[in-house]
Image 1: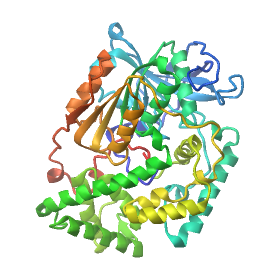
Image 2: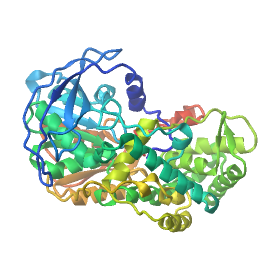
Image 3: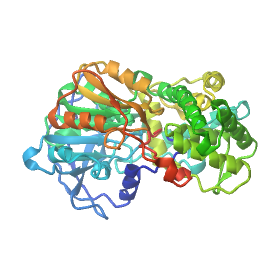
Image 4: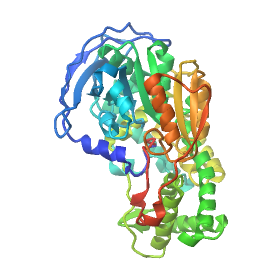
Length: 518
């Protein structure tokens, strides 16, 4: 999730560029809404006052702020901000309602996500919906959390397990949890997925809508599924892209990355060996694999200089883990790693270090939604085991996190088990939210349909040029409400002539929207 990763997708860059201006929206309030598993009062519709967002944000985008209860069990108590944006439906005569967005995380700002997506969504969708972005509670412009972390704290949230450093990892985890608790006191425990779903229903009420449609990516699929469980009668058309298994939140989802990374790694070494004439990295999968692990061992002895940033072996493993769903990109990167190991200069490797707010809001959800093991011995044993079972990443995802020292969740995680219609779209070779977790969500949402992109690569499907077939199914559902009669398998579109013309730099990696974890 929030690891050192690249943020080079078209959408991610667009959002980053748009977050600089000051939000100028005015405030409205709404009472909390109810649904199964919720014990709060019924919604009271109120209006939002929309105005320009300021800065360089186009006038077609409007902003507002909604006041919501910090604790939905106490609607008359303290309130916090949820910041919203809106792009009105392009064709008022065709307008159906509102389409809310969540880009994942759980720590990603969604405030200007509709604007960043507007160049990719089909016109038929933009004609029918007001596009509604929002920063979830605790994120960005919505009463943001801060734990007082530094770049050193944030550089590797998931840390490789080593016997010699485990005591330091335990101390680090306890310290981060203490800092988050001390700085946020009454707020921290209320930053949960269930409460964000309740905020979504207050957004619905404030917009004066009877139901909402929704597009959620990665973590956003879990948020969307929780909404379907709490507010099934408020659901219109939900598209859930690159799915989280609700049975595996959250430690189990991290461990799923390690499991699926091994399959993706084997597939990549096979591909790279078959293209040895182009890349010269080995004539057999075993040779490619051997080269990679030799470089990891070399980096563990002495970190590699990758364009001015030093990478140890764990960071090399993490970098490749992201890239192997795009074989040609990972092959180019392995060639550069080989050069760096030989002392040759290489271009800078783009990296991502989360901000204090991103790390704080990520931990609030991951640690606060579910109960984690509290004994360090559990993490030590699991990390030792998984470093053998899943050598690429198993030790990191099973190692201790601040969640071990988090306060007990204020309520249990939502059990997803309903027949609410929804459309799930999924790449076959996504190792961040792998196909197996999409199948888990499909089982939980019994009224849903799953669109699997055969040989689909990367993280994220809809409107990203992955599969015209999958895009057509999703667009048809959003515009007509018609789900496929059964689950669908779509072909991936042919890949561009990527590696033959692209410059040999990891910056060319076609990174998809991260599960922030992302």
